[in-house]
Length: 344
Image 1 (tube, rainbow, N blue to C red):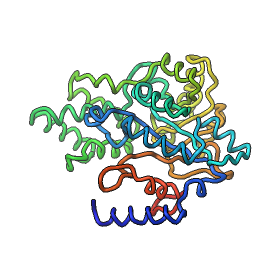
Image 2: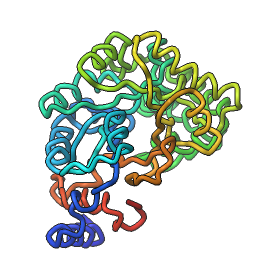
Image 3: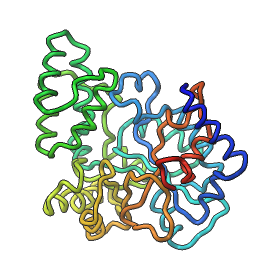
């Protein structure tokens, strides 16, 4: 571990000991929202293109154990309504959310949630679930991994495709993540063209079974257990890049289809990639949702825009000590508002 990180961890421990970053004190009267994505056993996480997006079931257990001791945990719909109603429980309100409706959430996250008696919200890219099609970043990531593992000619083809699209071709250790981040700056059509070209170059290599999305039947099962189901748009494209007609499809039509498939009211919307602006927030409100969540870091006071709520993204490597163990003081520091570059 670098000297800088040792200093950071030391500061986190000091602030924790003095009570300055105590989550009960810092979260009083505010709504906090925790974000998770994939939940994968380590053997699968090692083969996933974006391991930083995944926590293991054991890590999720550690998170929930700590969070449930310091926060009153529940679904976004429940906790947001309690927050709006002015409730001030002994432990501050926290909503647990999972983005993308990945099947691993059903297989690995739900048993851990049940163990802790916590209900959560799951956000669904509705058309992707309907088609059982991996999200664009997973299709791109798995195709790139396949090409990187093949012979020199395939790796050269990969480099040519990336260069033609203006994508980074260096830094092999972080190449896949770098390309996906750069792809988000492309137009929608250019991004999808890159995914198509990369998938064609990789050939008919099936994604692993663990990578699939949940089915509507599995989502209905979650709802029957008391979890909330929300929309994550139709196709997981970034909302600000959509024209007005596309926004109606992505936001309003996804709500209608999800309600039809599950027979449940859908009240919460999650912006893909967290991207939102005033126009998209207005579209979420017009579609009949009661709230929308972004990926902007922080908690929410009474003044928060209910259609652009902030969240805390739970990334394991960001809250570990020098030995790779969970460091609660570091999580408290990051959520407190005192951590450099992160608001509360």
